[in-house]
Image (cartoon, rainbow, N blue to C red; front, top):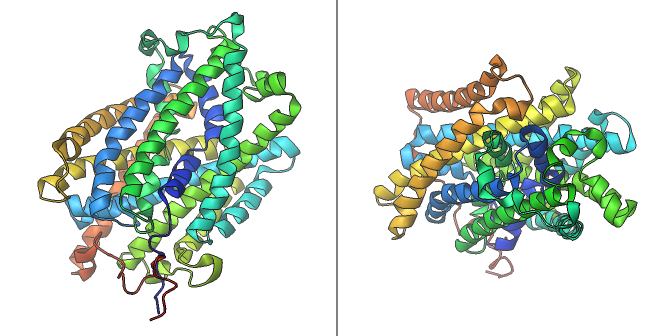
Length: 486
């Protein structure tokens, strides 16, 4: 007999990769992120920012995934910071993850609601509510079923974007493929800081893999899927940005991207393939965002489950499905995540917030900033973790050199991002509104620290177990053993 818990050894590395790439929403990156970067920064070398940011994310991932192999946990930021800097730091990490993964997930309700309303009419709030119901139901399913949904949509989405890239290079403006978008001299353009700041959001999602570390078949699946996801995003998005610039022309790409009547990139689909593929691409934007929302939903649900399992959150949040298609799914955390999204987005809608300028732009920018802070802290924590004897004889590159470079580079990009929040938020340079997101990030850290300090003041024994909870292998369903009769 088993007790409720996440099903062990059920998920493949490929399934984790699907959630990572799905969370980044490739069609939204092409139709939203890349077009917006050209429009707001006029940086022709935008394609090169993706490999640069990919290298940064790879550095930040080294210590993160190395620690997660030694200390697998469904709430990795919470557990790894606890084992590096102590339980109070773990609670601060958990607060960062819960708040800012939620911010990203909730921001997408504004984008998808606006997109569907623009396509078929009606209120964006109504369509956001429909998508909320779909995500809420899928979030209660077993992880392998969720992976099937994500994978099915993602494969079609990547195929259509690949067709776009091929046509872009086959129909270059001016008759020849320009190398200007991939010329390194373009990285010294005035708007490069803003381009880097905008590009960070395209990679958010690669970092969710360790949340599945208790469910994957082998410990190596996390590191392999993370490396594959970062490399894929860096190259795929870079090539797509280059294809768009080649098709429009490097000299005209910024002005065309700013023109709402130009309809990038869907107008190019119309031009090359006819209205059928353009409509499919638009529909895939909707499904892509839905898949991203489901990916973040699953991650948040696992954080709530794992933290409740250790007593720092109400224990009923640690409930999991025990039968059927919900078996092993963190149902308690899933329900709370759905409810919180409904409340936050509902309040914004009642307040009359613009779905793109406020709900999507502000929440996604806050999410990207908060998650980047979390990754830098984890990379710094890995240095202490390995110095104190953690790990399994990893090399000096894994334990010290690469994580150190990650902390330095990540901190630098974080500063650049915060200095260019006006580009991200579409507000006047120097506006006091730029202080809101840094204040929210700092406030979240302080809440986590205060949370841990209060537990310590009360003499709670919970702090001793923060980040150290493990499923009992004799009490939690193991996929390889579930059919044995004993």
